[in-house]
Image 1: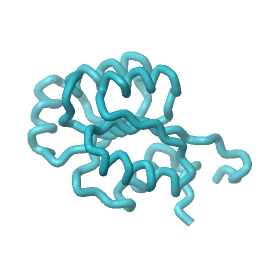
Image 2: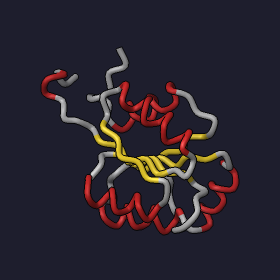
Image 3: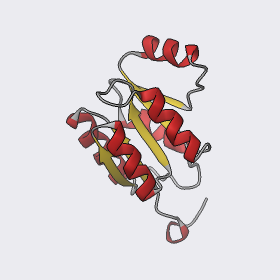
Amino acid sequence: MVNKSERKTLKALIVDDEDFVLILLEKMLHQLNIQTYSASEAEAGLLLFLEESPNIVFCDFVMPGMDVTTFYRAIKAINKSIPIVMITGYIELMTNKMDNLDIKLDYVLEKPFNRESVIAILKKCFPDYIDTK
């Protein structure tokens, strides 16, 4: 385990067109000392990604504007190792679409989600940095 004083600050990008989801995830991540950047559309999220270089991306599956598959591929073209967490209330639709496009999902966060499901994903991605105490 890394000492708290030696830990780097984790940064998360949240892209969702629902204010409630943005606010909820921001609150959960801030409680874990993760810095957040938020956007309500994929285009703005992509710009934030380029400007802020987050360590993880949370992205809604259904949003207006840029198609989520285009957004996903753009992020992975810039940084293929960054974990992307797809947020969805349409798990079967999302899985079928991504499978048909031969896109391997990193993580899925199904709505409605809770703090424990977010923490479980973060622990898989950053086992030395997530302290839930």
